[in-house]
Structure formats: C-alpha cells, structure tokens
Length: 340
Image: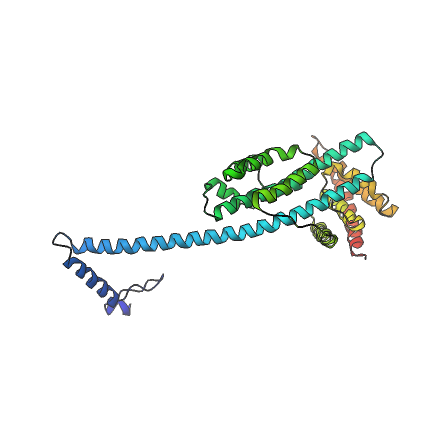
C-alpha cells in the first residue's frame, strides 16, 4: 500500500512493528557492541544474540502472566469450594434431622424399619456425604498448590474439576495430598462409605477442619428455614419443567414433605413407597389417593417397559394415563406450595 511505497514496513494486524528510528537505534547499539567484540563477531551473530535475549524476556513475561492467571483461577475455585463445604455441611445437617424425624414416625415394624433406615442412610452417605468429601479433598489440594507445593498434573486436574469424583479418583486425590494429611485423607476416602450416617457426618466435619482448615459455623433455625425454602423453590422449578413422566413422583413427594413438614428428603426411588405411607396423614384423602395412584402407575410403567416383548399398546395406554396423573399431581403440588 501507500505506506510500503514510502519505505515504511507494512503494518502488522497484531500490532505495529518497530519504526525505522527504533530499528536504527537497535543497529547502532549492535554496532557499539561489535566495536568491543573483536573481528570474529559478525553483525548476524550480534543481532541473533540481541534478539534471543529479547525473546527470552518475552517468554519469561508470558510464563509469568500464565502463572498469574492460573493462580487467580485457583483462588476463585478455592473460594467457591470453601463456600460449598459450609453450604453442604449445613444441608447434610438438615437431611440428617429430616431423616430422623421421618423414621420416628415409623416405629411399628421393627425389623423392616431397621432395614429401611440402613438403606436410607447408605443412600444419603453416597448421594450427599461423598460430594462433601470430594469438595474437602479438592480444596486441600488447591490450598497446597497456592503455597507453592507441586502435587503433580493429575492432582491439579482432579482438584480443578467440577464434577463429582469416582471412587478411584477420590483415592488418587487423597493419596496425592501433602504427606502430613494424605494418610488421614486416604482413610477418609476409602472408609466413609462403610460408616453409618452419623459417623460419616462426624468424619466429614472433622475432615473439613483437619484437611483444609474450614470450621463449620453452627446452623441456626433461621438458616435452616432458608435452606429448606431454597430446596423447595428448586424442586418446584424442577417439577414444572420436568419432561419425564416417570420422574414426577420422585420430585413431588420430597416437595410435599418440604412444604408440609419442613424437611428435606433425599430418597432412592425404591423407597418412595415408604415416604408415601407418612403422607397419608399429611394430605387430604382425595389428594393422597391421587399421589398414590401416580406412584403405582409409575412403578407399573417402569416394570412393564423393562420386560422383553412388552405389549406396545399396553405401554402406550399406561403412558397416556400417567401423563394425565402427572399433570394433575404437578398442579396439586404447585398449589400446595403457593398456599401460605
């Protein structure tokens, strides 16, 4: 273009190149160096040396910026995990109290009651305590990296991930933590699933303090009510956006408990019938029958769909019935939640 025809170097889109004055200054500096370097040094070798030094500095600066960005990302992730550890601990406390309240209402059949308690506790440990352990281990690793300890690439990746850990990843992360805490972390990761709910809760609380210096503030009544309200809002939004017919009952039952009994339930599908027994005294008879019918038809559809050679007409008929029941229960529960 016009600039090039006047002897100016063409403009680089990534940024303006050095001006002729700057290049001239650079060459003068190189000439000055050559005067003291003896006959063996060529202009080319002197230029190479000069620009190699410049490139090295640029590389160092880029590395410094990368490390700075990495440290900032770790700091933000640590802050998020730190808040999550406290929030999860408080939710765990509410889940545990809710489960005790629920079980106290079913004291008649002793043997089956014990079996139900065991199943519910194991489910809570897997579904709620393990994600808390994952956050504690990730936070411990991030804290070690932030004070300059290099635990290796694999631990770095595991600590940055937002997804829950597999049993194998959990052990790998625990073993990769600094020596002073790795044994306690490994014992926690390998043993917590064998504990009762109360033992698991105590271990998780100790670990948050011992492994990452996070003390859990006491949960007061107001905070507990806020947690349950937030849980209720979340479930209600899920219920009204739910597209899977067989999921309606699994969302509706805990939502009724949250609204009517002020508790949080995390139930495996096969134990929904156990929770339904308690709802009989909580809902009007007609409403209760509607919810129970939805549960019955959901189980029926799941069982029949999973059989080989299932009757397509029968399945279609069940799906139509379930769609109607699902819609009615969604309306019923939504209205319950709006009531003061």
